[in-house]
Image 1: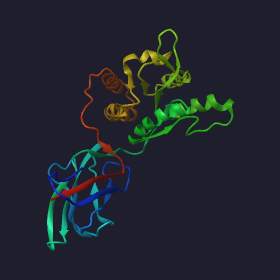
Image 2: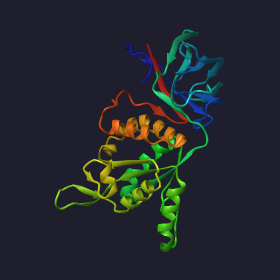
Image 3: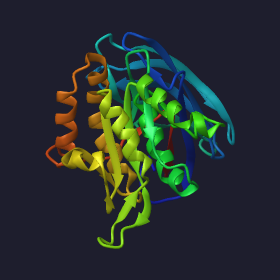
Image 4: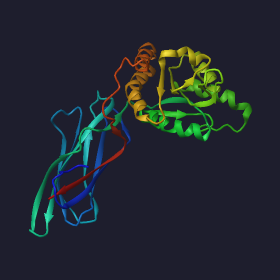
Length: 316
């Protein structure tokens, strides 16, 4: 929680929320961000100014003078800030929110300066060239498979990909059209991303094997020279063609999806470049380096998306 930790009675609590007008932006595009303050205390709060600093701005930041009073137990719009993305900026962009707050002390009948506050560089937005690319997602359709696969698919979409899985986004009513539909969707996609989840226990190795059709779908993509990413749950055996990828497979732990998110944040820009240039070598080198641990994956996990918030309080 933001704010001081001095001893005493809490005098003011609030929640600052913000919302971008788009979930992702393109290089050179203009956008805006709206700020709202929810005053949870019994005193009036006053927002004198507010701003946002993107990672390309160094010591500068977008800033507006507000002069907004927020009554107790109210949630009001503070301001809207316009901004412009540099034409050369792509990928994940970290930003920092700034605001200056005052509290009205009803006992002393005076305004108390609560100081300038920064949220810290822990939030980001995504900037991608248009158009979005198409990714065929090979994954299980059972509820237990989707419970694991859905969060991973959401991460993939955050990197500017429209996703298709036959049986989820693409429904085929006639079983006889299933195989040709899968083949056509893979051919029309820009890449294939396979999510290998447990299907049955191997009696000899004591390890889990994944769904059989993952092998055939990877084979189709391989045959038409599509970029391929295999994301497998740990302790799973890959058979057929996927097993030949060996050191180019990303492992994940369903209880630590944040680790996979960090890996994808490094890999996905390379995948996009691979699709744009039709050059696969650099992409597979990056994939192999991440899979083998040659690229360090660490640091605090950033929070991305169209909206964000921060809690605040002050004590006396």
